[in-house]
Amino acid sequence: TDSATLEIADGPLAGIHPIHPLWPDLVRLNTTPAAGLSGRVVPVGAGEYGALPLNEIKGQIAVMDMANAENWKNPFAAGATALLLLGGPDTHAIPVELQPLYFPRYYVPAGPLADALRANGAARATIRCAGRWREVEAVNLYALVLPMKTDVPRPAVCYAAAFDSMSTVMGVAPGADAAVDSALLLNLLRDLAERPPRQPVLFAFADAYAFN
Image (cartoon, rainbow, N blue to C red):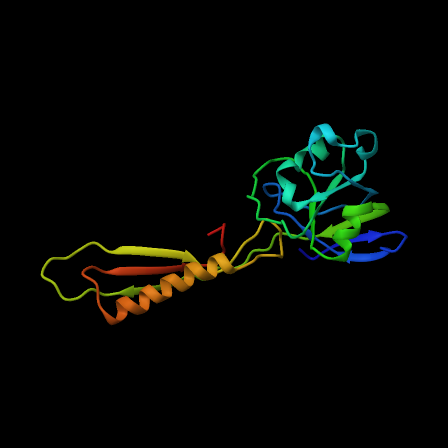
Protein backbone atom coordinates (compact mmCIF):
# COMPACT_ATOMS: atom_id res chain seq x y z
CA THR A 1 0.00 0.00 0.00
CA ASP A 2 1.40 3.40 -1.00
CA SER A 3 -1.25 5.46 0.78
CA ALA A 4 -4.74 5.13 2.22
CA THR A 5 -6.67 8.05 3.66
CA LEU A 6 -10.11 9.19 4.72
CA GLU A 7 -10.71 12.87 4.00
CA ILE A 8 -13.63 14.39 5.91
CA ALA A 9 -14.91 17.62 4.42
CA ASP A 10 -16.16 19.54 7.44
CA GLY A 11 -17.12 19.44 11.10
CA PRO A 12 -14.95 18.51 14.09
CA LEU A 13 -13.44 15.59 12.15
CA ALA A 14 -12.45 17.71 9.14
CA GLY A 15 -9.08 16.73 7.72
CA ILE A 16 -7.21 13.79 6.23
CA HIS A 17 -6.89 10.67 8.38
CA PRO A 18 -4.81 7.54 7.71
CA ILE A 19 -6.71 4.27 7.28
CA HIS A 20 -5.74 0.74 6.23
CA PRO A 21 -7.06 -1.35 3.32
CA LEU A 22 -8.12 -4.92 3.96
CA TRP A 23 -6.79 -8.04 2.26
CA PRO A 24 -7.18 -7.95 -1.56
CA ASP A 25 -10.12 -9.47 -3.42
CA LEU A 26 -8.08 -12.24 -5.03
CA VAL A 27 -5.52 -10.12 -6.96
CA ARG A 28 -7.63 -6.93 -6.87
CA LEU A 29 -6.26 -4.51 -4.30
CA ASN A 30 -8.61 -2.21 -2.41
CA THR A 31 -7.33 0.76 -4.38
CA THR A 32 -9.61 3.56 -5.55
CA PRO A 33 -9.76 5.85 -8.60
CA ALA A 34 -7.59 8.95 -8.24
CA ALA A 35 -10.65 11.01 -7.30
CA GLY A 36 -11.47 8.51 -4.58
CA LEU A 37 -14.78 7.10 -3.36
CA SER A 38 -17.03 9.79 -1.90
CA GLY A 39 -20.24 9.87 0.05
CA ARG A 40 -21.83 10.31 3.42
CA VAL A 41 -20.45 8.05 6.15
CA VAL A 42 -23.46 6.13 7.42
CA PRO A 43 -23.32 3.99 10.62
CA VAL A 44 -24.99 0.61 10.03
CA GLY A 45 -24.82 -0.83 13.54
CA ALA A 46 -23.86 -4.50 13.61
CA GLY A 47 -24.45 -4.79 9.87
CA GLU A 48 -27.39 -7.17 10.19
CA TYR A 49 -29.37 -6.87 6.98
CA GLY A 50 -32.77 -6.46 8.60
CA ALA A 51 -31.52 -3.49 10.62
CA LEU A 52 -29.69 -1.62 7.85
CA PRO A 53 -30.88 1.95 7.03
CA LEU A 54 -31.73 0.95 3.46
CA ASN A 55 -33.02 4.39 2.46
CA GLU A 56 -29.71 6.02 3.51
CA ILE A 57 -26.96 3.62 2.54
CA LYS A 58 -27.14 3.30 -1.26
CA GLY A 59 -24.19 5.05 -2.90
CA GLN A 60 -22.71 6.01 0.46
CA ILE A 61 -19.86 4.81 2.72
CA ALA A 62 -21.04 2.37 5.39
CA VAL A 63 -19.34 2.18 8.78
CA MET A 64 -19.54 -0.65 11.33
CA ASP A 65 -17.46 -2.28 14.05
CA MET A 66 -14.72 -4.72 13.10
CA ALA A 67 -16.15 -6.96 15.83
CA ASN A 68 -19.17 -7.52 13.55
CA ALA A 69 -17.11 -8.02 10.40
CA GLU A 70 -18.81 -11.32 9.62
CA ASN A 71 -21.71 -9.16 8.34
CA TRP A 72 -19.52 -7.07 6.02
CA LYS A 73 -21.28 -8.19 2.82
CA ASN A 74 -24.68 -6.87 3.90
CA PRO A 75 -23.95 -3.14 3.45
CA PHE A 76 -22.67 -3.84 -0.08
CA ALA A 77 -25.80 -5.85 -0.85
CA ALA A 78 -27.76 -2.75 0.17
CA GLY A 79 -25.80 -0.55 -2.24
CA ALA A 80 -22.90 0.86 -0.21
CA THR A 81 -19.88 1.89 -2.30
CA ALA A 82 -17.30 1.25 0.45
CA LEU A 83 -17.09 0.03 4.03
CA LEU A 84 -15.14 1.35 7.01
CA LEU A 85 -14.51 -1.19 9.79
CA LEU A 86 -13.84 0.41 13.16
CA GLY A 87 -11.38 -0.87 15.73
CA GLY A 88 -12.41 -1.10 19.36
CA PRO A 89 -12.01 -3.13 22.55
CA ASP A 90 -13.88 -6.09 21.03
CA THR A 91 -11.92 -6.18 17.77
CA HIS A 92 -10.77 -9.66 16.82
CA ALA A 93 -8.99 -11.23 13.89
CA ILE A 94 -11.19 -12.19 10.97
CA PRO A 95 -10.26 -14.84 8.40
CA VAL A 96 -9.11 -13.88 4.94
CA GLU A 97 -11.91 -14.48 2.44
CA LEU A 98 -11.17 -15.22 -1.20
CA GLN A 99 -13.94 -13.71 -3.29
CA PRO A 100 -13.67 -12.42 -6.84
CA LEU A 101 -15.62 -9.17 -6.57
CA TYR A 102 -14.34 -5.69 -5.74
CA PHE A 103 -15.69 -4.65 -2.35
CA PRO A 104 -13.48 -1.80 -1.07
CA ARG A 105 -13.04 -2.24 2.70
CA TYR A 106 -10.84 -0.28 5.09
CA TYR A 107 -9.90 -0.41 8.74
CA VAL A 108 -9.97 2.58 11.09
CA PRO A 109 -7.89 1.91 14.23
CA ALA A 110 -9.44 2.36 17.64
CA GLY A 111 -9.28 5.96 18.81
CA PRO A 112 -11.11 9.31 18.61
CA LEU A 113 -11.83 9.02 14.88
CA ALA A 114 -13.33 5.53 15.19
CA ASP A 115 -15.39 6.63 18.21
CA ALA A 116 -16.76 9.67 16.39
CA LEU A 117 -17.64 7.73 13.23
CA ARG A 118 -19.30 5.03 15.29
CA ALA A 119 -21.50 7.59 17.02
CA ASN A 120 -22.37 10.04 14.27
CA GLY A 121 -20.83 9.10 10.94
CA ALA A 122 -19.85 12.09 8.80
CA ALA A 123 -21.68 14.39 6.44
CA ARG A 124 -19.23 13.96 3.55
CA ALA A 125 -16.01 12.01 3.16
CA THR A 126 -13.68 10.66 0.48
CA ILE A 127 -11.61 7.50 0.63
CA ARG A 128 -8.42 7.41 -1.43
CA CYS A 129 -6.18 4.38 -1.62
CA ALA A 130 -3.16 3.78 -3.85
CA GLY A 131 -1.04 0.66 -4.00
CA ARG A 132 0.47 -1.97 -6.26
CA TRP A 133 1.78 -5.48 -6.19
CA ARG A 134 5.55 -5.74 -5.84
CA GLU A 135 7.84 -8.66 -6.53
CA VAL A 136 10.17 -9.30 -3.60
CA GLU A 137 12.51 -12.11 -2.66
CA ALA A 138 11.62 -14.17 0.39
CA VAL A 139 14.33 -15.70 2.56
CA ASN A 140 13.74 -19.01 4.34
CA LEU A 141 16.08 -20.15 7.11
CA TYR A 142 16.97 -23.78 7.77
CA ALA A 143 18.86 -25.59 10.52
CA LEU A 144 19.69 -29.31 10.44
CA VAL A 145 20.41 -31.15 13.68
CA LEU A 146 22.38 -34.32 13.00
CA PRO A 147 21.50 -37.40 15.05
CA MET A 148 23.62 -39.34 17.46
CA LYS A 149 25.73 -42.01 15.80
CA THR A 150 23.72 -45.12 15.10
CA ASP A 151 24.02 -48.18 12.90
CA VAL A 152 20.40 -47.86 11.77
CA PRO A 153 19.65 -44.84 9.55
CA ARG A 154 16.39 -43.10 10.35
CA PRO A 155 14.29 -40.71 8.24
CA ALA A 156 14.47 -37.02 9.05
CA VAL A 157 11.74 -35.10 10.84
CA CYS A 158 10.93 -31.51 9.86
CA TYR A 159 9.47 -28.77 12.06
CA ALA A 160 8.41 -25.55 10.34
CA ALA A 161 7.03 -22.17 11.36
CA ALA A 162 6.56 -18.75 9.79
CA PHE A 163 8.83 -16.08 11.26
CA ASP A 164 6.99 -13.07 9.88
CA SER A 165 3.34 -12.12 10.34
CA MET A 166 0.25 -11.36 8.29
CA SER A 167 -3.14 -9.84 8.89
CA THR A 168 -6.47 -9.35 7.18
CA VAL A 169 -5.73 -5.65 7.58
CA MET A 170 -2.89 -4.72 5.23
CA GLY A 171 -0.12 -2.93 7.13
CA VAL A 172 -1.33 -3.87 10.60
CA ALA A 173 0.04 -7.33 11.33
CA PRO A 174 0.29 -8.31 15.00
CA GLY A 175 3.26 -10.68 15.24
CA ALA A 176 2.56 -12.44 18.55
CA ASP A 177 1.31 -15.66 16.95
CA ALA A 178 4.31 -16.07 14.63
CA ALA A 179 6.70 -14.99 17.39
CA VAL A 180 5.45 -17.75 19.71
CA ASP A 181 5.80 -20.36 16.96
CA SER A 182 9.36 -19.26 16.16
CA ALA A 183 10.31 -19.09 19.84
CA LEU A 184 9.03 -22.63 20.39
CA LEU A 185 11.10 -23.96 17.49
CA LEU A 186 14.21 -22.07 18.60
CA ASN A 187 13.97 -23.55 22.09
CA LEU A 188 13.50 -27.03 20.66
CA LEU A 189 16.46 -26.47 18.32
CA ARG A 190 18.65 -25.38 21.24
CA ASP A 191 17.63 -28.43 23.26
CA LEU A 192 18.31 -30.90 20.43
CA ALA A 193 21.63 -29.27 19.62
CA GLU A 194 22.75 -30.05 23.18
CA ARG A 195 21.21 -33.53 23.25
CA PRO A 196 21.33 -35.02 19.73
CA PRO A 197 18.19 -36.93 18.74
CA ARG A 198 17.97 -40.46 17.33
CA GLN A 199 17.17 -39.17 13.83
CA PRO A 200 17.95 -36.03 11.81
CA VAL A 201 15.73 -33.04 12.55
CA LEU A 202 15.30 -30.19 10.09
CA PHE A 203 14.02 -26.83 11.33
CA ALA A 204 12.51 -24.52 8.73
CA PHE A 205 11.67 -20.85 9.37
CA ALA A 206 9.56 -19.58 6.48
CA ASP A 207 9.31 -16.02 5.18
CA ALA A 208 6.38 -14.49 3.25
CA TYR A 209 3.57 -15.72 5.48
CA ALA A 210 0.48 -16.85 3.50
CA PHE A 211 2.33 -16.75 0.18
CA ASN A 212 5.34 -19.03 0.66
